[in-house]
Image 1 (cartoon, rainbow, N blue to C red):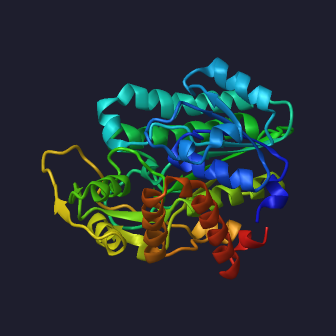
Image 2 (image 1 turned 90 degrees about the vertical axis):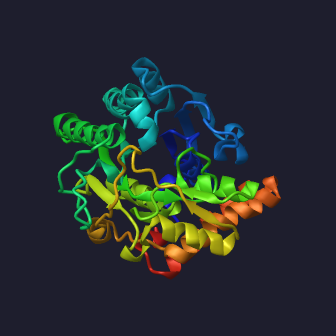
Image 3 (image 1 turned 45 degrees about the vertical axis):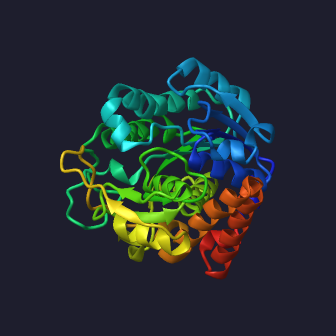
Length: 362
């Protein structure tokens, strides 16, 4: 699926050394794309990028989106048919400690990619990935729609809202102009989980590290609700959005990709489900003096469903089963990383087709 769109196409992918970027790079390689990656070196050890051996199977450049000359040179050299911009400082708690780096990376890094796209002299379709946290979260419990106000309490969330504003401004100022060969859109995803995430201050990798060491899982915000989804869900949305945008100039310009409402669960519920597949224990590490993090968050995906025919494929239980299954299998045999990742992509695509998801027949 998607092979007709991406087979033998040149793809420029920023953030390919990160968790989501590595999954997307692997999926694109399976589709027969020529992938040009642009990112900082992997931050964690282990990293999914290294576990999948991606450096030897794609064009791999270690570079910084905060460097506009480097971004422009890389894009011009790649001559991409498609661009997926995922590079970011993605951690809320780190953004409190490093606000300047967060804004430089998430806002100006996005602007540098947008500006470099203006230099291209051939057709190109670009999807800019932001986050569900780009909305002004009023903690009202209602799902956020693409037309809702942008904002953010913390540096990370506000930086992503600022990136969305920049994307919309560049689109209206340059890429919606008659004769423009570049089409761009933004994609906003919920809380993404899956095998191969080793980042700090994320509940799933924190849980796996605790279980591997035989320690209880420490949970900072057990009652905070998040829209949990497997990493393949929004990636399928990004690919579907890029395919639609390349084929039709009137395609959506900003879309949410989130799970079904039954996946909007408390962090404590997630941990309990994880422990069904990897026995252990957890402890409440709530801290009343901790920095602010949103308590309620959910996305409306009606627009993605109505315009792309996109919808989630895996429910909450299957998402946790595949996620913990990946970590347990790799814990037993590190060589299982690549074949298991490929198998999960295959299984997800098969389930999408069986469920009649529109992109399943692309």
